[in-house]
Length: 248
Length: 299
Image (cartoon, rainbow over all chains, first blue to last red; front, side, top):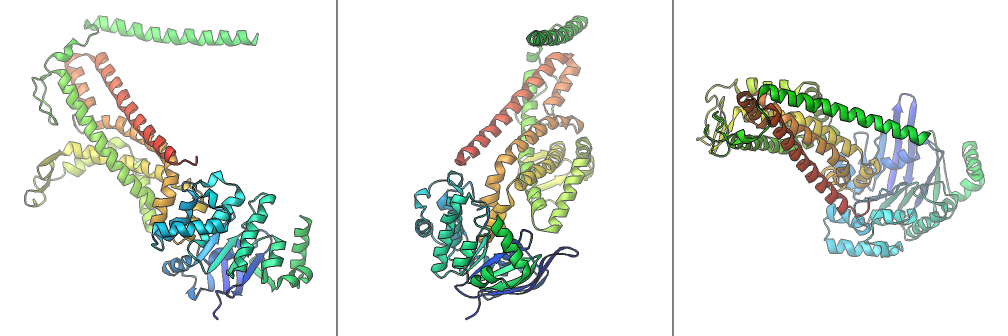
């Protein structure tokens, strides 16, 4: 079966010498969960954002769900990818002027031209899956951070995506709210969703991921199964990072 | 001690303020006595005995000063509201072009804003009048079956006549104000967090749909106050009509002062009527603002 994500030698430079991405290659197969870890500024967010065209790159090639994009950043291809890929952000980025249900039905109705009633039914189903269907008529600022992030996951799921991208989904949450979001993500992984997750949550990476990719200064330092990465990382740089993470 | 000082200070300020007002009133009374005119408005009913080139309602020189002032007001309102609509339309387009992805459009609109904002409005009005309209010959363009006719007399469009003076003022005011409105729109759009753009893009929404459904509704509360002050400026700037000979309220007041010498009464009429007009604009905009905020139940 064809992989969902294939990145070949992705390179992106901000200014001369400074590279956000340096020859990054990776593959994510269907139904697998890839966790991307690394210190801040290592290029994790940049990498995951290239997957749905929010970031451009200068060199290399990217194949998402069989659609190949290169440094020319073809808008039409990116639009096609975005309709099949969901994304969840660190800051939730819910639309504050729309109700919870409207946040979820907007894209299915506007992009996929589904009927409003049908989109609302599916939206309510997704909200109940996330355990927040009682909030459907509320507005984002009436919800807690954890609830907002679960709405954001439901919104990303509304387009029935074949790949979900998570960009530090729990970093902006209160510690006691982190687990409700991680549990929702676990559930999705169990249902066979293909996911790429940028996170610092070791327990999540250990339990859920199939592989951990460690990034530093835009370079892939290593890609290992989680049991190896967390107990016996191959590289000195990875071990240093994990030690630092433990201390915090 | 401290409280005493405060009272003393406020007392002092009051004395200075009343003193200044007293001097002004004194000057006014002395001048009124000197001209021997007194202070009254009975002259308003006398015939104006001057002609007006442009009058939306019937007017002859035997009509009263009051009627001439009303005609002036109608002319002012006509040019203010048509410029307001045109300026908003133009400004919105240019504001979007300025923030949009298209580099060429962005550059053109940035150039437009720079040129328009760095030159005086009076100069621009003169340009549109003398270069734009008076530069045209009689019937310079081919008439399209008597429907559309443009010449140095103005524009005739299916029976509707627009004078060169009105059009020069309309163009000048609209274009001048549109550059400022474009900046207000741009500021409003930039006030919406980047994450909102990323969120709608990642959902596959097109740029135009995202702008209409996500960005503009959130930018409006930041746009309305700036827009209001530009509308007020436009209304006040419309008094420059006198430069191109358009008979607006200010120009007619000027003529009346020349004829009657009633400068104080005329300026009071002018001040009060502009105050009322701008209060009307402010209140309408505040109402719109309140409706927008009300529709945003989340805030």
